[in-house]
View 1 (cartoon, chains in turn purple, green, yellow, red):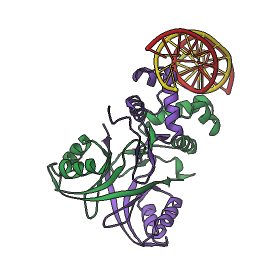
View 2 (view 1 turned 60 degrees about the vertical axis):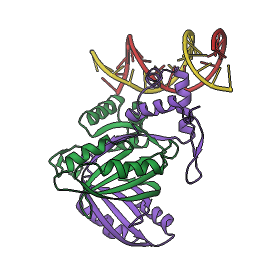
View 3 (view 1 turned 90 degrees about the vertical axis):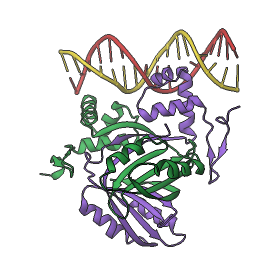
View 4 (view 1 turned 120 degrees about the vertical axis):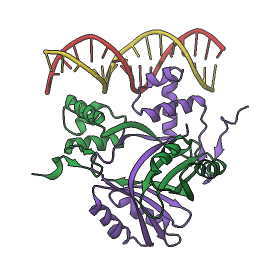
Length: 163
Length: 163
DNA sequence: ATTGAAACCTAACGTAT
DNA sequence: ATACGTTAGGTTTCAAT
């Protein structure tokens, strides 16, 4: 028996979905092209159309697939200034700090981390002035934020993922 | 005249696409749901189907839209251990370091940054053992890498973007 | 019970005018 | 913007394993 089909538990007690090889193959196809037709997916992973349809439905409704989206070139959509901002925050303020961050424009991604700082925020703005405003004005006025350190992004690229 | 329709130049000399309000509205729809039909998009942004079709075609072929993909819950797909790894590298090794990083499994995103470190890598692995292996073995054997610092991700959330 | 194969109508695609 | 032939969606049925 393989371990691949065992349901597991994640660290926070959230259930980890039961994904067989077909599910994973479907996910791989959808990662490559999120607009692939169900028909095309079905024949690529060698299952029937109805089966592919049911699997995609299951994975989207159980939260494994959280949605579909377009990937954009930040430069070309006018977000030319990106930065990672490291926040130090006071204890037990993560929830409220995250809430505030989510309301600020140009904030792309927010992570609570362990290490020399507490929160890592990816910010993508139209220009350096907007970036400066977001970091110096908006971030610093959030209750619980003790300090920030900013690392400008010069260049970036995607990794290969689980491959 | 609004500044919205002006073509611009990005920092690296890459052209910034000429996007009018309709283009932006289409992008917003596709960010919300990357599998929306062209028909649905067309009526939501109040243009004809053919027009929406042409705009999406233009934006995908000029590189503004770089693709479509599924968004996954990392926990549920079995990637329960994520971390940001900060690399210090020797001068002028960025290109080769990035090349090496792209070949390593579980590497999600790579950014060349300015500040106390040089490269920020987002890694998503199935467990702490895999994470440890990636960082301690794979990253440290890359020529040009002088040192790493790892920040485990405890929790994360998306920001609101440009909204 | 779950899957594959076929059929079905409706909706969307892609292109041409 | 409309129209047109083709393809896909979404659901149902049935046989098979």
